[in-house]
Image (tube, rainbow, N blue to C red; front, side, top):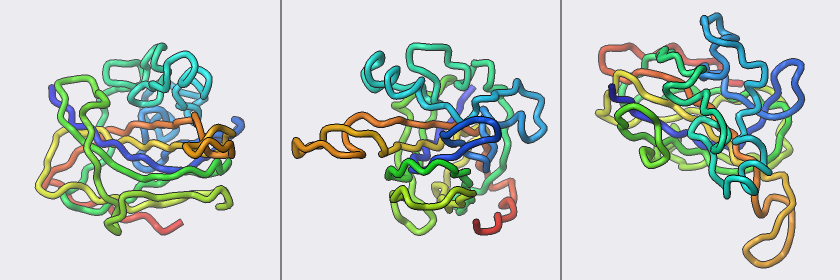
Length: 220
């Protein structure tokens, strides 16, 4: 079984109902949110908290390492291929080279920077080494929040690679927050420097010339 993986790094934060803070990708639906969209998958009531176990677990316990799809590096990898939440269900069909809509739900804006998408072929389980950068729809390689944007849904156009097909791909959203106090490279201390929280969500999609482009979403 071959799976191609796409990494999408973004600076956003969102809050699902009844849970305080954090973020999630809602389009395409991710492994952690499938249950909210009618799929027969286990519910994850903390689907906005795939943040590598939190800043302490990620940076103090694991030296900055994180599970490929947001699970704690030293914990159960439920959201990676072979895990409880990864049911091998491809959600969306895309055409190579097309510009697709990715939607993030934002409610607690922690600022941050970078929007990227990466990809690589792996034999079964996703690995960090399998990713390479992709562009946004406007050919930019990053998207940044200042921390002042209001809560709500944010649509981001992402360009898929030309002439690349895959029966099963992994689309990954990553948000590097920038709201914690830390030491900067110039030796001074300020908000946004030093270790920060990292959020990740993975979605399963297909990319092929056999499929039409899914209808675009309304701008949010």
